[in-house]
Image (cartoon, rainbow, N blue to C red; front, top):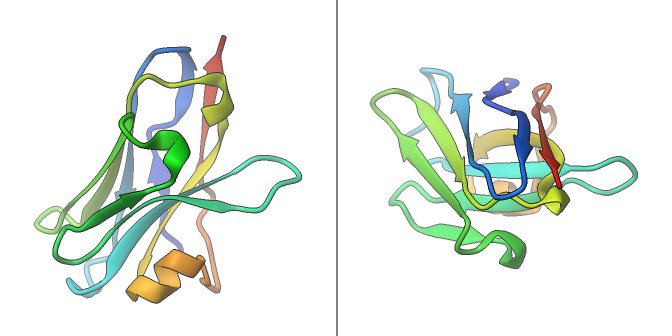
Length: 120
């Protein structure tokens, strides 16, 4: 299943965006969720993850600025991004699955992602 991220766009440095990811109705409530980003020539990196019980982890570069959340009733995964910096510019992807799979990003398929561009 390819999950589609949305909510990206062009924002000035210091601005905010909220990304959304519609999860399929068949997803397991015990699955973890993850937000990833990728820039040209670089590997996709895990930015934030959330377990089924709400435990959250972030890459150091976004700690204190990004917040991951999930609404199981709405089948939606979110990434609130505040105090955005030009280095946050990337295509952002979401995915769900077993926690270890989320940590490794070891998914067989990815959605199109949503582009976030932060201008200085």
